[in-house]
Amino acid sequence: MSSENIEILRRANAAFQRGDLTAALADMDEDITASRVAPLPDIKTYEGHEGIRQMLLDWIEGFDGFAMSAEEYIDLNDSQVLVRFHQRAQGTRSGAPIEADFWFLYTFRNRKAVRLDVCLSKDQALEAAGLSE
Image (cartoon, rainbow, N blue to C red; front, top):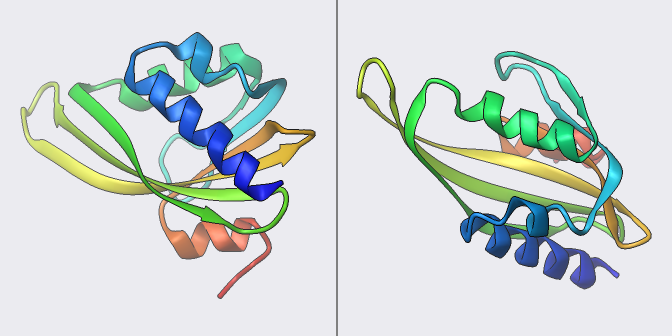
């Protein structure tokens, strides 16, 4: 099952890279819950596909030239996959380049992502998954 979950996320990322957010959300449960985990700023929980869209809009606010690519997929267990995303952008006001990695913890049920936790570090994501190193 876990390799299927990774394939689902690879498909979603490919759709996102094409700019097709509808296809990217196709394998996400309609009632998915997404959260930014502290110490990330603007801690908030988002619900459903519209919530995911809003989360993305909130995430890129204040940046130009935003790009995000999945760099690593880690199979944690039958229901959880950790993905390291590398993000690049420039500050809208400052023009300063910004580059960072973030860790997205996806939880699956019945081949649908039902939860997404966005974390600042791998250790934090593993702790959120209940798998602290």
